[in-house]
Length: 379
Image (cartoon, rainbow, N blue to C red; front, side):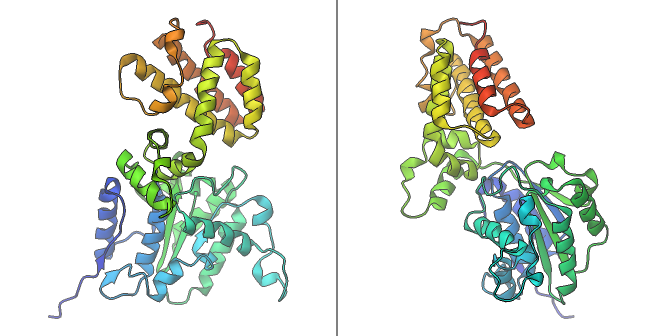
């Protein structure tokens, strides 16, 4: 009897996510890998990075160890120019652009493939990034149909399609994709990533292997963020406050390396000036910050929430998440602000975040209103 040699699969990543990788490697080794998996978890924790590595492992042709990184399949999986391997959210004008097949030779017009390649290139540069896709992007039915239309060109090779931010499929796109999932073509695999699985059709979720990625430890966030910043990066920029705001997400940490100082100082001023009834000074600072869209407003409100929670911890002597920022607020000057006041302030901030997301009122007006209501009754 001829002994069948088992191929070794190796998926690398942080210790905090080791159990999930072990599960995937076992399925690969035993040739029982599902044709559709859904990777979910908080933003910026490496879902796309894992999806790319799985795609390489599935397409790799090395007879001993996969992914090898140098065979044709591995290179195809890591090539941003192979746009058929991806479905990504796009703005409506991008998704409705002309197809490359319909553009004459030598034309400089941007096609839907050009727009898609630009997004994929950014993902490969840094799959942890949390700001590649803006709020206006989505996955349309045309993007799903373009994906299925490419199946006829597959030939006999394994095909892996990564659907990034799968929760951004509109209803028509979700129903079209569901039909594909009901009868997946041979040797075809789908890897979906999402930070909001509850927004996806239950019928899609039920047809995918669920894989929940856990946030990283603070130590892992710091080391991974420094690695992603590169050899010439200033490690001191990854402060305790940056790591605290990241909540286990290197992607968030990368964002806060550039933005934490401004957001944290504004949050501290917002609290102090609100307690001092100096609303016009708050309005001036909000104007200087230039917070105009919903995404920016919610980033600031997220920092403000952290600060209020830390002020509660400070009262109880618990460990702080953003100690440097918390030290900017002197609560001793406002003895009337007790735990109840801070809890209520947190609730008002959460309510404001919901109102910002509804887009019924401009973020600036909502933030101005918040400044007045934040400690109402405790001044």
